[in-house]
Image (cartoon, rainbow, N blue to C red):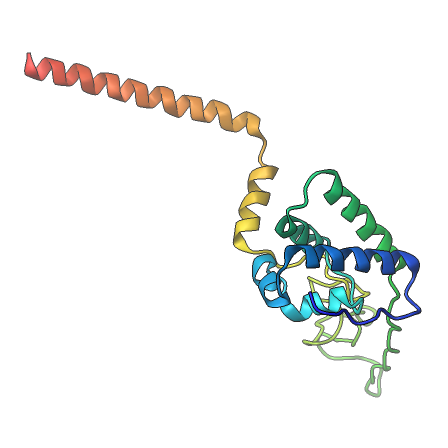
Length: 194
């Protein structure tokens, strides 16, 4: 809840508005960035980048901040809309040019070829070295599409994906089986005592 760094003047209005709203939401939690990082599974340095408009936050980070701040329903949906508008307008860093791949005399390249930037050489299987190209968690523009979530959020996500319909009959079947077993045990107990 200290003073925020001024946002860059060249930011698009959508990004500026979104980051200002995120800052207000973060201040509403009363938490430090370290505490926020612990509660949301996004590090302090990630939150610094998101709240200073250095990098767009993943949608799940915004959802996690809303949850921690006690925001629900329509207000969370409004943050989702602001996020979409901001991500579309977010300034992209210029992509560095891809250096040419040296090809030995004769024109053939033995084995798999890796090209910085993640583009495979024509007709070759690409193996992008660490630190180059596109990772599974980042898109071409550096935006995290699939963030790492804490295990407790994954449980909520899993249960929300499973349809409630098939679970209810299975539970009913287990209850019926348990009732039959208890009934059989009671009858067997009465026979042995009688």
